[in-house]
Image (cartoon, rainbow, N blue to C red):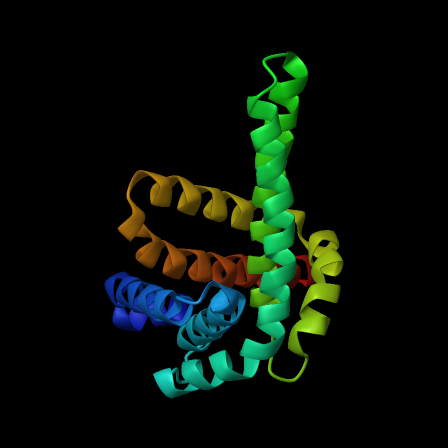
Length: 196
């Protein structure tokens, strides 16, 4: 990543992140394709940062490969999100402190579901598929809990920005995809420093 920033500058990377956000948003228009779109966008940015060549044809190819399993992940995430929203709705009818606790728990659960989808999308590969990506979530948390917290914050900021101004979802999706790439790079460098 440092080599990419040194040769092309941060603005080129920022532009690529924004273009990736556009691609992810277009691919995710049917909501069930959001995990596949994120997986393709994250893979694209990872290749871009690692200077492996990142043609958009590879992004579309990844999106097609991730679509079937990604729809299953999206359906499971939607069920979790519906349960969390239902709990938040119930909490709104309860003016007691228990209602406040239930509302906080519901919002937290909603954030955790969204973060799990983003982390799984970041772990998806054409070879491993979604099953390996979802099963590996626990290993990701054990290996670097800080990375998951960073992604959670990126997801929460995306939700706030989108709530304030809906069109901001487009660049925010690119920024979330880049956050996954950045925390993986950070984890890799941390492991390398510990080994040194």
